[in-house]
Image 1 (cartoon, rainbow, N blue to C red):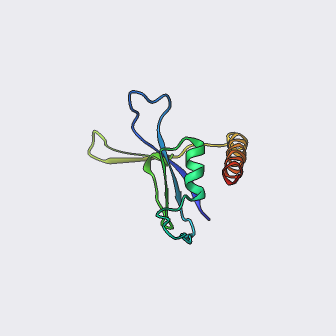
Image 2 (image 1 turned 45 degrees about the vertical axis):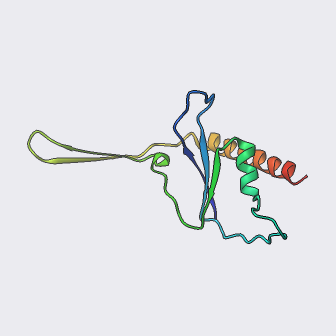
Image 3 (image 1 turned 30 degrees about the vertical axis):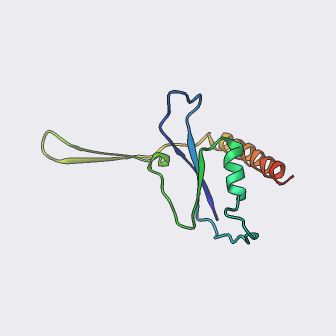
Length: 120
């Protein structure tokens, strides 16, 4: 099943919100039939990216792991006695589940609305 991710881009001086690229990985390949003389097909992903304010979209069947989206922290430190200390800190997301579900449902509804408007 395709995954949606956000790849944040560096902010420019005139950006009023952080720029980003929509990344869709593990997506099934799509085929488009081009009409005579047509050079490029505008996909539903392009339309969605434009509707949500993304600077672009990357769609690939491969898996892309964006390090900035990883919530696990790793820390390696050498102790005074020369031993190596390794810490792995994982976030406790309990209590945020309902909020995340609500935000995902809202984002899905907005995406569906944007796609419906684009098809009109």
